[in-house]
Length: 188
Image (cartoon, rainbow, N blue to C red; front, side, top):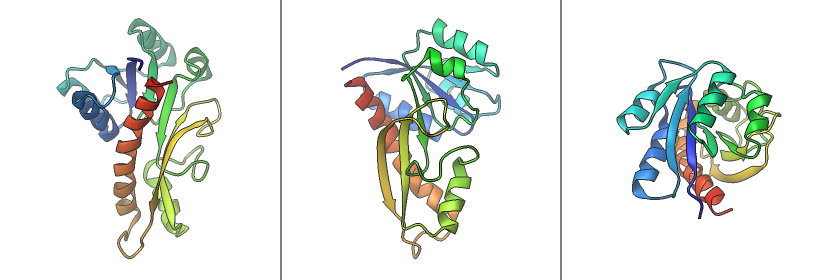
């Protein structure tokens, strides 16, 4: 079982980051969140990191990001609501060492512009009977990398009345499978 140094990249509130911080505290996985990076200074995920005693940085350029990752000896990058497309330079430097959480059962509802509530609005509008979340490796093609883990949610439209309610239900799955994905990678 490997112990990896993780960098978690966030752009917003950081609920997936918080689930990883909690999982680390519980000893769910061996790895250590060594760095949290956001492209937005207003991201609450930075506050979550600081509250947990984790180094937190605001970085806008890919060169600065790569330098920070190398300087902190990061083994695995976890995209947890990071809304900036990763550069090919970074993907090449960390080939098969970048994972992303996506709020659908890829390949459905993936690709450019499909993130957050937009995904759930589309699933809701299409009245899909199931949705879920996916953790996958990041490649140059957005949301097309090899899948590590997926978990389904059967959608009951008598219970789930809006895209926002659907988002909340899927977020529970995201929190579970993201920490499971790290455990899977540690065992490889």
